[in-house]
Length: 275
Image 1 (cartoon, rainbow, N blue to C red):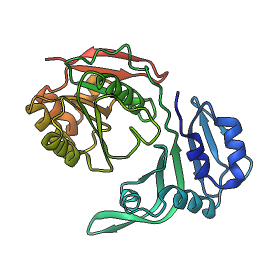
Image 2: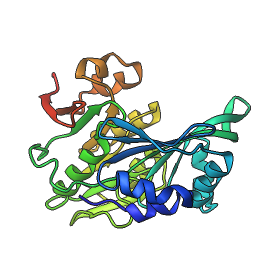
Image 3: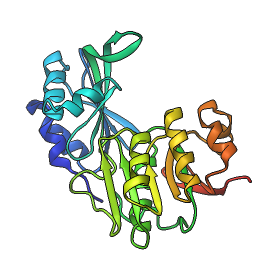
Image 4: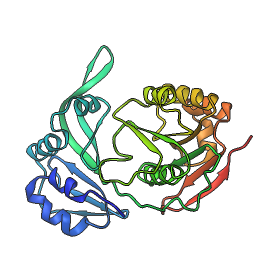
């Protein structure tokens, strides 16, 4: 298992680092900080709380340390998240700013959720992805990104794999990459897929979290060019995936051969997609 743990500790207010390190070094999944409430540490589905209340200064410290005031980080805040060094994703919540009906950022923050990035090489060894397009389904926090990362890495030992890492959390610095893997980071998924098709000539394209119609259109274009796909989506079953309007074009196009359905206990089952 790989985790850029020191990068996580470095973005936390100094007063909580020692306790977080002691309690969560091996099992911390999420750290939730809410103004006026004690920090919540989510460990293997169970919660523990520290004995001091979070202030606005604590939240600001985390955001400043994580973003380093980079333009990309500022842009991603309008989507409700930041990605810190080491691939740790910070979800943002508070009063938002809108212009012409489009969210442009936050006026103030009231809470953040830090999801800890951990890598488990070999976790996908039971999945046969050879010659197939694979879709990984599951609820948030159930391990879709972790499984996708390892499957892309394993397949890249034999095949040319282009990874569109829009949130910079699939393969952050320090995480093992595959032998024939190219990673396009900090780029919108639809744009990244089109760029990979045009300039990298991949056999496989991997992308995390299909969330928009533009993503679906880009995946269909890639499949039409003969490229195999690895992707994740929020759904608890194949039937739930089929029913969601945003995913209907992918279902109707039949571009995925195999579906991996993740379960809450981190196990998974493999299903062949109906023809």
